[in-house]
Image 1 (tube, rainbow, N blue to C red):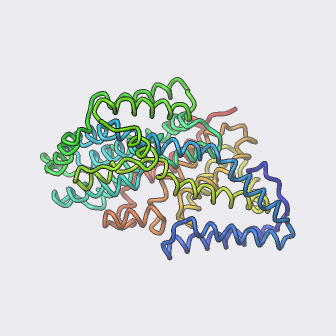
Image 2 (image 1 turned 90 degrees about the vertical axis):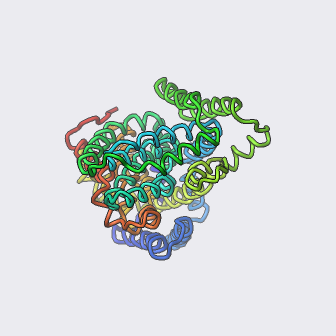
Image 3 (image 1 turned 180 degrees about the horizontal axis):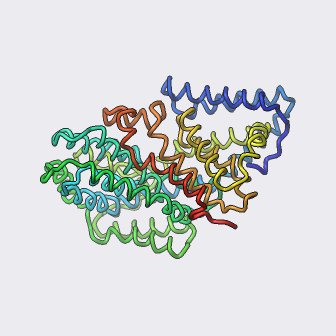
Length: 458
């Protein structure tokens, strides 16, 4: 969006006032009124349009800036369509159900909190949705924690940490794809680069959860065994169902573009589904568009497996379009440039730049409570500065996820925070100290920045 020419030069006070008003509109609507983010963002766009007209910027110029903003994210929109197809194809092929079965099989160990963390991480990575993971298997784990008299706050912290590890590292995750596309980085290169900070955070978190786990020799596996049996009875679990995942990994290692990789993996998954289903071409078309509908009769399993399809991505796509349109207006009206010019002198070193980026992503999460905006606005605001310091864009996309994606569930009034608290019946304040992975990720990315560790330069 830095290619969008500023049509006016507001004062710092004026630019800051506009940003504060926009933030208030979005944060109050989402946090206090419970509105979906689309509506307050649309109101903010209307406000910016009227502000631009008052500054005597032509409507055509404002309209063009919105269009340019959306065009900058068109790659992400196409990827989102393919993600919807990939998810539904992986379900019908048995790939996601088989990964779920493997995850459930790990719960027999006595290190309860660590196992909860690992399983939710596996399932979160398999399905690419943190909130779906929390609302399904997360709810089941909270019930098990109550049965064995384990800490609900610690269990909830482990669930949130594992779910957002998956949300961050899964190629199916919309936030992961958004972070990569907003700075024009290959999806799998982005995921690979994130591992430098994510794996240490994962390992440290795992050790902490294992250390804090109660001494439980025999966790009640009745519920988990029931889920495993349900997957087997529904003919979901097959050894060959892992092939689409292996194809995805091989394509990643071969550095095949994400667009092509997602298509290849989806085609392989659909072909493998022929071995255990008798669906017609019409059925496949419906599944690819509307998603797979699971009818096992087991609520948790059906919730996990009823998803996917192109239509499932419309919510995210519309939010991206509106957010990018608003970003285009903020740049065209010179608001972002004015504010950044005042802090440029503070961002001359790599450590300072990464710290500033992380704090911006965290700040947007805290004030607005929306993780998509924290990624979009942070990415657009700092792209040029990373170029000026000779840093590769994948450094920026990593920081956006380390301090943007995983911080949202730690904010009590955020979209994720409100949802998780209602699903697990544990307040954000209670589980926040135990969401180790979410707390460590921004801390490690800042430390790595100051120590110049794993920083890629042009």
